[in-house]
Image (cartoon, rainbow, N blue to C red; front, side):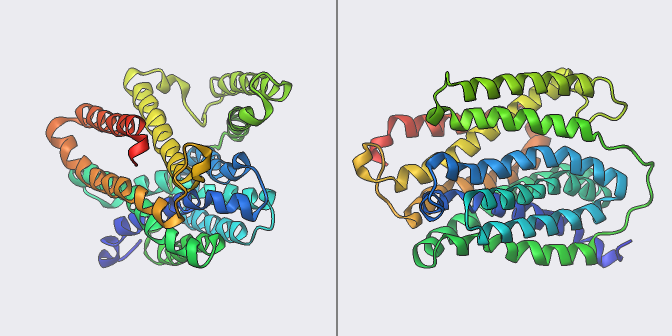
Length: 356
């Protein structure tokens, strides 16, 4: 176990781990046009640098959470941070798109810091302060984005996009060292199995569906490739649901997902995540595309970063306030207020696009 003085640093380490992962995720977004040129690929190919990590994180999060129950959050957190750092190194040195995607898939393992951080915080933070700690941890997503956007423009404009991919390594490597030193070794728990078949099928239908959506514009929405991928996604999704309904320790307990409070919260998370990622992908491209496209602004990477910075600051502030607001007005009103605010922000951009 950690010493008493060290235990106070454990939540801080969890916050920093989440911020480092956020930095790994966000750091590619402002560099997408440069990655497209540097690796001689299409806009869809460059977008996969972001999609691959997102997809990997979606699969890794429940798997890593289960591994944390099985082997303890300390050991698994160390493995996750080292894997994510190695992935960023591979991506930074990548000579081609396939190698870049391998690195980003490895980096996606960093998504496992979320369930591990929740477990670590629950173990060391008093119950009365857990909601505030989780809200503060969520704010690290915005803070990581803000840091990446502050650094992205000058690094891309003066040093090149590859240097930008080294930035998360600066946080991930020391984070692994601190985790080894600070995070306490947990008491042994009853071992549970890992639903590897469920994880494989979950990854299969997500990969098929996202590949179809990503390549639909280039291949054609009615092309055999897109239709075949959508059919494969549907078949593997049905197989995944069948497996999850039969195994004793499912990756995702679909019976729990049927509960109203659970599925509605997950649906809200899915939609808000879509809005967040769509905006993060769209705005940098919009700012940096040439004016002769009819909708681009011909800006620099620094200008694109400055455009995203207010959103990152707002996300950080909202995460810090979420725990306090939850105790005072309830989670439903907090979620509704956040959704309405985000919707109004996107609506403003839609109607005032030409004035940006």
